[in-house]
Length: 355
Image 1: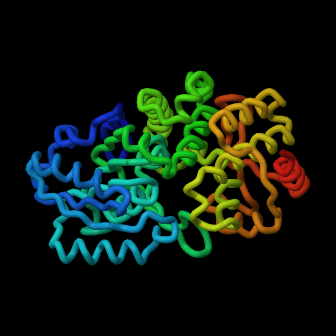
Image 2: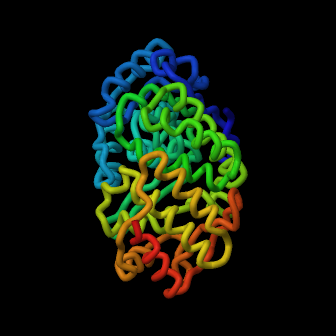
Image 3: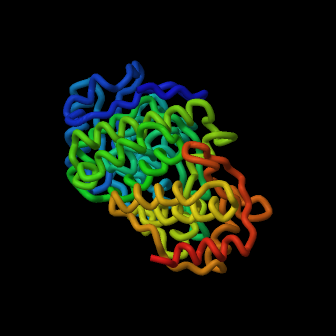
């Protein structure tokens, strides 16, 4: 499917068994000589297979191993990778390829957007979280000790190749991917809701056929949003549904919690409770949140301190005098920039604490 943004138009290929035949899926880059693959140890086999395919397509593959951890998604890692690119004498027409999950896609995107003042980027996401969400839209963010994703750029790839067989073969970032798929279903209100209801068992089991269908549908939702709002000036803010609560929960729980999907799942449940408290939605839509999340094995409750979350919200990018939330006015009707008073937030956390 096609993603068309101001910063670039590119195809997202979704299917099983794409990796070994990926060479023809890359667009023509007539001046590229080297393809530098950034990959974590867990994805070295996938990177080797892709390197062979790129070699057959006339590019010299070079591998740089990078850590796959939220703690490593920082400027120190970018500096290390950039130094290795300089050692390899990589030129601005060469290709950076991120092979991995959300962390690797962010690191590759940030490096590609800054090294040589910008280089072509390709993403080969290997986890469900990256295939369904992180690899599409061009965002590339880094963490600081004070908060997640506080540094970032927008740099569109030239292609995204999502071999769902890679996501089906491991559980890394799997729950996080399920949470993002539920998010896309709730903010779009389209046939993805029915698909998640019908295929929940196959999706939990990592069935490749189900994954291909769900990932493709999820990417279509996100592609439609980011194509119309590349820089998050409008509708793209809706993709933060559940994230204002979720990222604060991650911050108080520890950065590597971000990979397990629990924080965003609970964040969406909190957003549903907030919308109900504000009279925007009824019990039926709150129940749909619970149904979709629990049907995929995701949590819907937890105990958190408002004081701790408030400290995290002070560093939220969407903070404007107070924390701002994305909530629903109905299924498929998200609205952004919504404030909440202390009483409402206290009651939302009380709702969350109930099993």
